[in-house]
Length: 419
Image (cartoon, rainbow, N blue to C red; front, side):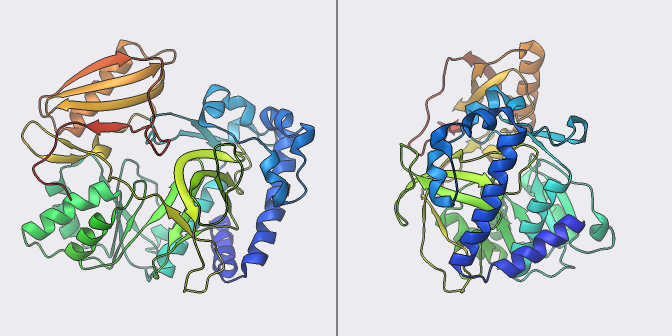
């Protein structure tokens, strides 16, 4: 709790600093992280010992080669810092939204950053400490000390649950804030409006997927509340957050974000390129100039007056939805829960017809029939028990889309109406 409070205090204070001061804070933390990574991890000991990789300021950072998901996936132990006992580390995996699973290690104190950032955004956008939060997600966190005393309370609903059930639960719960993926919130908003349930919230918080303008308008209109976006990943936690004035602010004092060209060189502000992230808080498993697979650009100053840089993400499609044999529409997130399945290096689920899913995967070691049965079970569960068939296709590689990301779920079945 102390770590969360200290991080939150720092965020509140630093957001109003000048861009020059924020860059100095980032630089100081970056140089400390580079020294730590070079001295305590085998991967960066080799990489940062190259003569060309000498970094004395942020201007020198492009001399350090970028780190890819494959680097971490193929040799995760080489990224773990010897400064921390292995037994003290927690382990998780990336969410699989890009189809490539990456093992991640962190300390309990490092988890404070994500909690602090989310609390920072909520309070900056008008949430109060006693507003109940309803989270529709694939995980559930145990309540911390403050939550046990009624501060920033959270209730959880399953991302695989039926929309009508979750909406009914929300109606009974009456939370002030609802938090989920856009592709989960959008169907709820449609049902709320079409059935005239008149469910309203103080605010909605989205993340994990692109929040398209059409989805933003529909969710906000249905629930009579503003909706705020976030950008991040499991590797970096939240890297940017949307303020009341509509800008996506990069949390510069905790995550260093670069926009790079194909050679890994930073582009000028305003120009699009690939996003590379360096979580300045990540010490147990440092990730330096980590390629996220996303496309974006650095924007201009926000009228809110914060010194934090702004981020513009490439506009594109909404996350795919799937269409069940009954005609019902479900979020792709209801079947994309494969992050702990071992034995696959990358995967993609293609819905060929309402009753047929093709699970395309790049094999690792140890998948087996038991793993395949579990994949079939999870897809069937996400399809609410409707009769669907899952076929497996092993591939050497899976093509990536124009943004550089690997689309995890592709539906070739078109519902009657799409926003």
